[in-house]
Image (cartoon, helix red, strand yellow):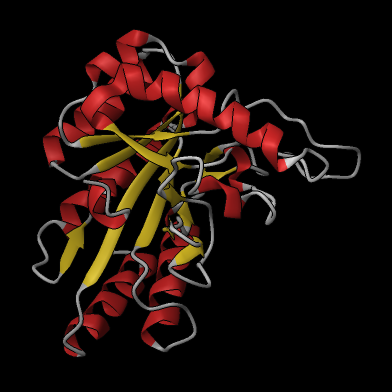
Length: 253
């Protein structure tokens, strides 16, 4: 066993020794078209029975994708079209600071209605914005527009992003986006998980937020797939570790 896996196991043991339960959840972004990578993702979710939150791009979503998901897969809304609208000097975002909230909400509602009508019972009105970015001014408008949840990246500061809007983020990204777009490696990936878990345990992060694992099936290399299999095999054997579904976390009936 590598030092990274020993460190991860040690952190889980500290939670167990404290009489506390570790909660994880799994979000995968950028679902669009049926392909071998998506098929492998869905097969893995089915084989392990780990709840999967699949963030689908509404404008690019093929009907076959929505038809192929099983009952253990939740459909979240990944923006509207995943188009970068950032102004000069602004980081990549579908929702630039200069865009009026009303215009952004109108796009989101139209896309949500399309996605909800096709995904039926698997869809949850939860927004996972592309690049995990959303202007602070936009969040307060989402609940009134019919959204019940928001999911970005990094430890949340509060359970609600705005009135009526549950916030549950991801904290561990498997992909090294600035270093070849392959698997980030066991050491970096497990270190990110330990950092969030220890911060929660020590009161440095909001303790009730489940630790979220973020994947991007379309760019997974074999090392990423093998890591996921080992992560699930390891944690599913532990009585004090549970994997939560999007429906549970965002309180969507």
